[in-house]
Image (cartoon, rainbow, N blue to C red; front, top):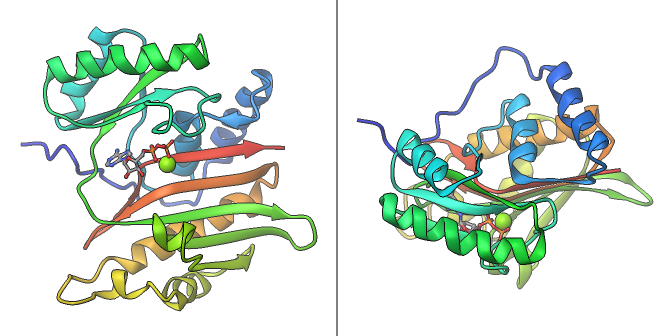
Length: 245
Ligand code: ADP
Ligand code: MG
């Protein structure tokens, strides 16, 4: 039986298919779209061997149900539009949908709110990742130092406690590992009070690959993988955003 939450990470032989990356970036250029929607941002990441939940656009409720059945329940539905940056704030994220009726209802609800912001918004369907530790990986361009990569733990750890780590791009795999364990909140990943340790090597791999993506394509001026859900084995990006120059 298919495990609905299991995203089978791709382990490519090569780091990227540059042609595919160029195609994604030029598609955005043609559409004069500086902010890549989640589906396109995730495609970019997948080209660099970064595991993500699939993000498939549905144009009708029937199609959303069909995709959900292909993926396997539970699924997540989200607003899909480059103009909706904070999807949950806009009422555009519904988690843990267990059957066709729930998908149908969520589709209608999300579309109604999304279309008030962007008349051409779609709804995406994706697998629900199983619970784990949520971390954030980001990249920005500092006016003085150039491209930098950021790592933090999700939620209050980053926003409230500012427990984050920055490095100049490029980083090597060891730098990535060092960034992760340098955080005060690292015990949440390494194992705290009987909690099982999480797959730090998988997170370090994503950090390094994100750094390589930005190094190779400086036209990507901002990248947000928020969150990446880290499990005992593996880690998966469930939300992604990219901004082009
Ligand atoms: P936004 O950041 O635009 O509000 P997200 O896509 O990050 O929207 O979704 C909000 C939250 O929902 C995430 O922080 C995460 O906790 C959860 N979430 C989103 N997608 C998934 C998924 N595919 N599997 C499990 N949890 C998810
Ligand atoms: Mg998010």
